Each structure stands twice: as structure tokens, then as C-alpha cells.
Image (cartoon, rainbow, N blue to C red):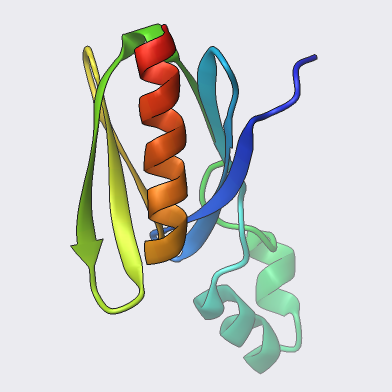
Length: 117
């Protein structure tokens, strides 16, 4: 098992994906979470609705991209606090939403690893 060079949370769709950058790949995981709507319904029904539908919503999601498939990294501002770091691959574009300061670190790390590959 290798140790990640960089780990960060991507703030996407109301949930945080855990992203890990290794020397040869990018991995991320989006875990199932509790929605505000389910929590409210659970409180209003004394927990009965949570028993019927379950506590978590959505699907867990994991993906791995080999760095040799990454062709470029692009950034764009997303409001006052965040930057979107787009990782362009041979068949897909993956967006990570991070703080402005973190975006520079993520971009620099990925660009350095792409140039080494």
C-alpha cells in the first residue's frame, strides 16, 4: 500500500469527496451521507420515517485515474471561497472544488507529477 502525496476534501454537491493523489494515480471516494430532508422527516415523525427509508441517502462512489491518462489540469474560480480544479483525462473531466489556497497546491502537485510521467 502506497502513501498519498496529497489528501484533501472536494466540496461537491453538498457532500465532501475524499481525494488522494499518489505518484501514479488519483483516487477519490464519495461516501453516502445523511440528507437534511431525511433528518427533518425523521425528527418530525419521531424516527419512524428513518426506520422505513434508512438513514443514509445516495450512493457511495469511488474512482481511480492513472496519472498517465491525465492530459491537463485547469482551474477556474467558483465564488468567493472556492476554485474548481478540473482534471482532464483521455475520456473524462473530473472537477474538484477546493479553497483558493488549496487549489494552487493541488494544481502544482498534479502538474509536477504529470511532467514526471
